[in-house]
Structures are given as structure tokens and as C-alpha cells.
Length: 198
Image (cartoon, rainbow, N blue to C red; front, side, top):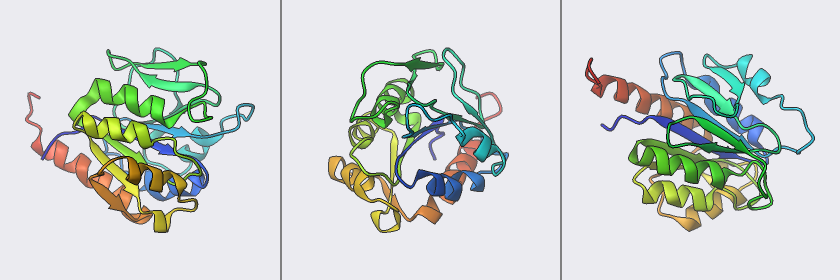
């Protein structure tokens, strides 16, 4: 079983409930960094890390420019900034133009992460009202990463999952309540397959 190195999650309308269904199921043994783009109003203070820290075993924080990715940490894109992954596996924030009417954009995170992690990346598209994430998930697939889409039937708003499914032949279409346990299984298999010197 392949050892994955990072998880990227994109979500929009209905996102808080979806993230609450997934991230608290990850236990302290989960050693991959998790990067989250949740569409938020640009002038809204980011409440998401505080909210997640009350519910998750993993530490959640707002992503910072030039910050290195740490295992077992949830990084949330700040309002009104694109979140990107750099070649040296640090994060970058950008106030460049909106993509798919969004900043932060799921596509921007997914595409930059795909170029860095290639086949060691897991991409997840959840509930949302636009097509953001479809192109990014296709790029993750192109680079050999693992692609997961929430079953549209379990999404509060199904436009984003449906757009992702239309854009690429994804690896897994899962009901919302199955995504967290599946990610946990991937992480455990990665630990099992790692040798002490790896």
C-alpha cells in the first residue's frame, strides 16, 4: 500500500457540517498534514481553526506564509488568500485574482500540491455550490495522486462534487460518513508499510 504524504480538502456551501463529519474521526496517530480550503466571506474572521480544535484530536490552525508543513496538523486557508504549496513543502499565501470567483480557491491549492507531492497526495472534494476543485482534482489524478469525491447524494449542496465527477475518473466516491474512516485507514496502512529508516 502506498504511503501518502498529505491530504488536501476543498469545500464550500455546507462545509462546516462536512468537515465536522470527517476531521474529528482522525485520531492522534494520523501523521499526514491536512490542508483545507473552505470558501468564506473575504471580510469574515476565520473561526474554523478554533471550531476544529474543540472537536479534533489533530491540531488545527490558520495557514501562515512560508510555514513548513507538519505531520498531524490541519491547516486552514485564511479568508481572502489563496493557499499554495511550494516545492520545499512550505505554504505560501497569495492575494492574486480570484479563481472560480473564489479566494481562497480549491483549484489553486490542489494544483500546487499535486506538483509537489505527485502520487503521494490525497485530494478530497466535498459539498459546495460551484465547480471549484474540479480542475484541481483532475490535476491530482494526472500526477498519480488518490482522488476522493463526496457522494453527491450525501452533500448538502451537490454542485461541487458533481463538477469534480464530471472532470475526471475519480478513484473513490464515498458517502460523507465514510470519508474520515477511509482517510484514517490510508494513514494506518502508510505507517504499517514504512520501514524504520524511511
